[in-house]
Picture (tube, rainbow, N blue to C red):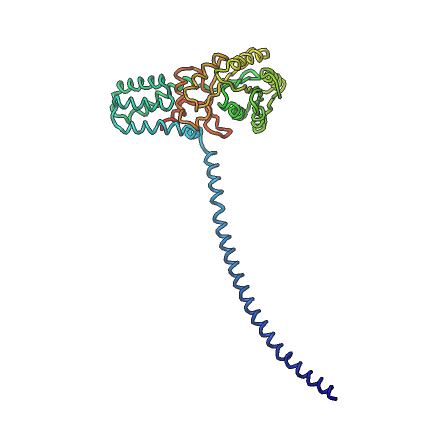
Length: 379
């Protein structure tokens, strides 16, 4: 009986805390839920505002990079022939024109003026002989026309330079026989391989078919570099792993004849004027290819690096003695202030300047023009 009553009393006591605790737990849960949802809503709002700001900044940042690259590409594409030459001769023009402009602003024509002009021309590698000729003609014109102000000398100086450079202005001769063989010679580092690639592009633009003969069997990777240019221009490059350069050029002429190709451009190993055995090899190449065509090579061009300055005159002399040169190509004019060397060449030699290199792009090999060249030198 007592046991039964004890059980009833315990049951009532144990039920009370359960009834009292339940609503307390519910209230605590409700409070925490309210706090959590408010924080989530705040963070979501912040994320939305941040993402919208990021998207706006991204949209404004993108065009600035693309516009810069596009404008550079468009400006290069739209340059005219004369503008391209001016751009290529920028360093030489700055060296000459800056000094000449300061001289002209001096106002008077006197001995000091001529001395300063002489220094400016020689500094730009115009050369001593060419400079003396220019000064003599300038003084003569001043006397005849009775000029007193230095501002009137710039047109006269341009006129004298154009007359000098006209002596070597002569485009590549008309191609009559096929295959027309162009033998390319020069020292190491003058830019023969690159010039061949650019010359190929120029001839292809004139609707001529071209084949390249990799006659430089001495220099490592010469064949591979020519093959890259051949692939870019979509023309055949004939080479041999190890072989005589004369044989490579001879085989190329035979292949061109069989395929009806207009022009064969033959590369040769770079050699210094002091390397007599390599200079003599040029004579051997000429003898071998003349067995195929007695008139070949139809054009022998010497590639000159404008950075060498007056040393270019020594190179012309040495190579011309080995194989008579019919043309010159001046490269890397855009990277030097020694563009006046062309005037020095015109004063001492009558070998035509066929082309000039005024940049690194494939279409930066330009036909030499005396008037455009002088305009690029003096503003």
